[in-house]
Image 1 (cartoon, rainbow, N blue to C red):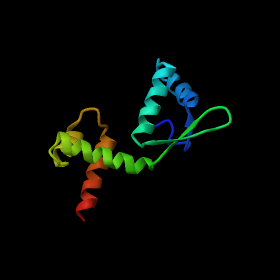
Image 2 (cartoon, helix red, strand yellow):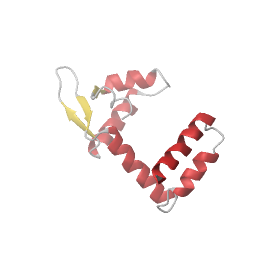
Image 3 (cartoon, rainbow, N blue to C red):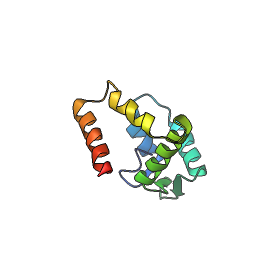
Image 4 (cartoon, helix red, strand yellow):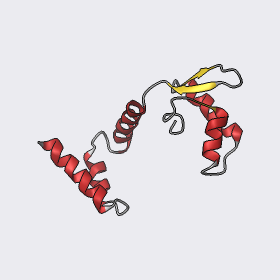
Length: 110
């Protein structure tokens, strides 16, 4: 999905080429995953001249929002507070990112 969202649509070959530039992956794995995403309603397939093209059915922000809600519900029993505390204390978070997160929390209280 992260490969398809920026351009709005892509073929299996385009997604495969992009992913191969980052790591070792089989073409058939990409094809299977895109078929699964289509079956789940995340992608819509359109026949093209030479290859089928896939496009997201929902905007990235909408999907991410839903995924975060689901994650918080499953892992933190619906409370985002433990997640935020973890993020603020996470050693991999830069000082700049930590300050930005704290500012977001402060702004939200206003």
